[in-house]
Image (cartoon, rainbow, N blue to C red; front, side):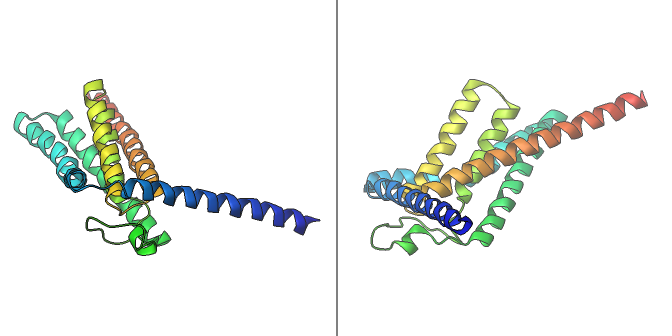
Length: 205
């Protein structure tokens, strides 16, 4: 009886997994096959903004902080860079552990790769680092005119990875979760560190 129930459970789980995989691939196929030369140029530009924005924003804030001797800016820029580092480390570990091939490798007749992509597919490193940056900046500067453009940009980068045929939707989704999670974890760690430093300074007075 137990073996029979186990077989049923495994069968249901397997069927659901196959359905999810098919949905994942079908959505990617639909997005990738909507490619046009003009759309490709735009999405290539968007996908290549990951590093300039990710390191440009904290770089500008750090420079401002050093010039004006503003410790808050220095803390914020350090937090952003730490978030990006953590996100990258988690993604690299997952890629090497799971080793999911790129969609154009698994489905060469149905998915076309329109941009360079190295290593493995799961999760999306571009998406992860962009959502890490968007979340980190939004937590530090919680204004709608900061939050809206940052997450719009991060979402567009994630979409560009599917459009250009280098990531499945699940790669992008998990990349977004890893990036946002890294930012939230780093933010509360830095908040804890700053509170401790403030308490130590207060005790010395």
